[in-house]
Amino acid sequence: MESRWAIIFKAFANRNRLKIVNLLGAGQVLNVSQISRELKISVKSTSKHLSILRGLEVLEYVGKHGHVLYAMNPHLPHDIYMVTRLFIH
Image 1: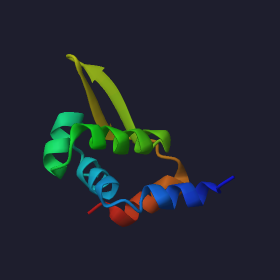
Image 2: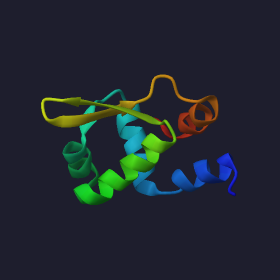
Image 3: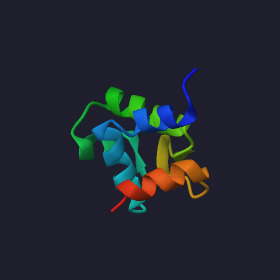
């Protein structure tokens, strides 16, 4: 069984997930298509990255007008908060 820190660092070892954290950490609220366009990767790949970040409670999401909107979780677990502070500009 992997330690929580191993899981966290594996999640943040991916450049696209770091870009998502940086993008949403700037206070934006975006849907998967908008994030996909910004990162210039497929919607399918973007969805996988978002799922991983949601699993770590990095992101919150809400359905609105037929879209799922993603934002940074304002109540991040402390360990995740410490790591994300390193990546958000």
